[in-house]
Image 1 (cartoon, rainbow, N blue to C red):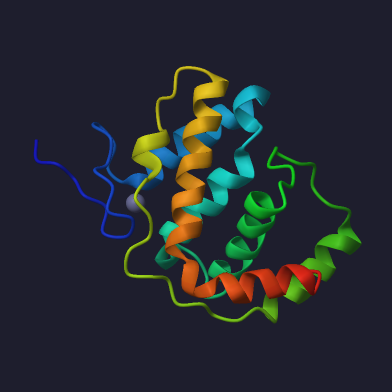
Image 2: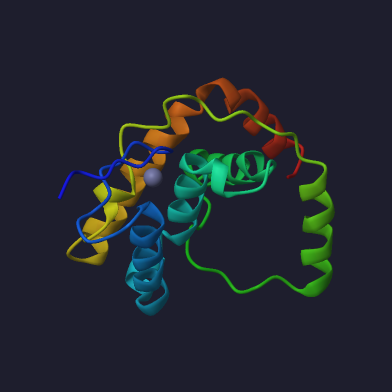
Length: 155
Ligand SMILES: [Zn+2]
């Protein structure tokens, strides 16, 4: 079988999976079933979304980049959280609609979901996810100024 390269992130899709999304779904299932793996869940979601922005809405880059900046630069908790109260959720939706549309960079990072998929234990998983997330954050350097500004303005 020929190598199957993802047109968005450039990963060689892990054997037996049709596309990156399948590997991502498997990683998320593991993060949801084991809190050790789930400790880095938000990094996984942001890194994946930023490398596959065509799969998401036009404002998703801004949303995920702002959060990734907080997770990486401020060390905020990346664990799977509880759903926010309804009022908070509504306010977040309103803010989301005001986000800018950030163009994704042509090159979206040296690491991909393929480098994360299949880690042996939570520590290895966390190391891989953090390296992946940092590579995506670096690839989005042209938008760092916007992301940092959005953090200080409370987004
Ligand atoms: Zn991909």
